[in-house]
Length: 379
Image (tube, rainbow, N blue to C red; front, side, top):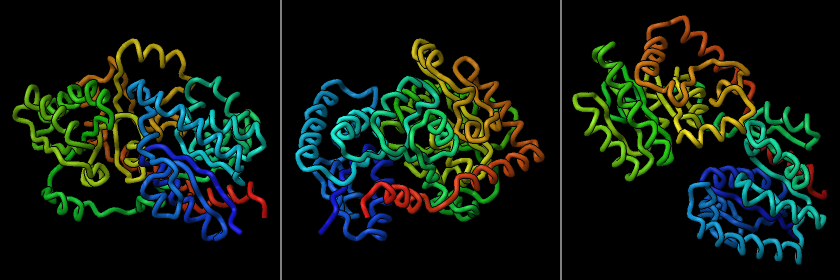
């Protein structure tokens, strides 16, 4: 007789995490049956799709209110279904705005709940920890400092590691990647990653193109590669280039952000998961971030940490430059990158720090997550 597991994932990253978790659990417990909000990779892993993941992936703060309201009855129907026929366990994968309320309601009815991927409660809006404590029987975190935070607040937690450590190899072949991207083996490249969201690109494209010009003037012969997540973002960046990037050697490519960072000698990027990827690729980097001034002041008031870049958060100190708001100027960004390119000793020290952080994240994250989940299931 199969044991039912309810699971809800949001966004493509959640689909990837959830599908790996489902497969790891099936190896250990072939009697498990999964159902819930699923993406294509979860479905391929054997999850019964009650609603497509695309319905949930509109939960971002910038999405239309109408689509958000559309999800409220979806959550209500799922709750009603699982209260009427309780699963052995509910697993919420990321999507905290959707999942935590669902988890709280199910747990109140006696259904065991787990949440995979901590919201950034340790960084801002810490008051959310009270709701999390009510909602989950176990939090599964990607980073060790997150687990420390939950232990301090008496929330049951398991640190399982980040799946990117399993995906990104320790050693990468820069020459091979450059050939694949039709870049010359010789020469110096900087990867420009202005973010995956339109508002990030709107605020960072100009400073990044300005930084490219500053570096070109101070380091003749340097070139740039800018991966764009989709055609809309490419068109937005292209418009900035046409206005401010005449004469610069900046090549736009579709997707392939990880390949672009591998091919580069340094990276200028927006804060986000890409900073973790750059660290695992052992690439020196400078982080820039800009928001609307009012949004920045609100976030600053709610923020509880000194750093925003993941390598700095994981190290507990500033390893890589973070230049925010008015500090993110072409002159300051360019100077920070130039220092990394010219200082061999600094790059070696940074590489050693990155290697130590990578080791702290462990490996085989899906298996470790599955083992943590099994502790919550009846034998």
